[in-house]
Image 1 (tube, rainbow, N blue to C red):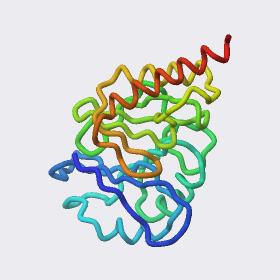
Image 2: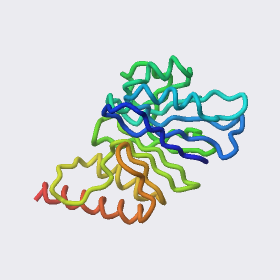
Image 3: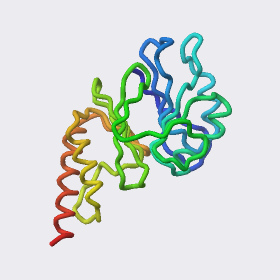
Amino acid sequence: MRITPIVGKNRVYSSNVYMVMGEWKRIEDMNTLVDVGNDPSIIDIIAKMHAGVGKNKVEQVVITHDHSDHSGILPLIKAAFHPKVYAFSPFMECVDHILQDGDTLRMGDRDFEVLHTPGHSSDSICLYNEDHGDLFVGDTPVIIRSVDGAYEEAFYQAMLRICRRQIKTIYFGHGEPQFHRAQETLLHSLQNVRNSIRHKKD
């Protein structure tokens, strides 16, 4: 599996955009964008990528949540590459398939589990690949350094589910990926969420 960040050329507020491809770019692999951001200049960048012989540059798009910095140019991506679009929110435009918690999606040459992680937004999801230990989190706040936040039980349960997976790399919606000590970071965040909820109840 190859995970490639797509960096636009315009100075607009936009999320990270990741292209997920199979290692050998076979016909059966699914060229997938995780989020599309808000910068139209990525369309020309994607059009110049080698995506595999006889394959669409973008075969599917997965939106981690319906905020404009993650989904703003979705209509343009849809018009340019005609991908199938997956999202958790039933209210988004251009969506072909509504995701459910626990669904499995083929991205590149690997399967990813869909984890519903309400907190940043009600439709936030993470995408987890067991083979490589990769986790796409969108804007789900998985790095929590204090107990001062106000967290709901649903978010704690979502964090608990994430921490039960073996995570090696975290791909964020903003900022650089975390390649080292990802599991340790997540467990520390889980403890802070737990303590925050306990303090709120006291």
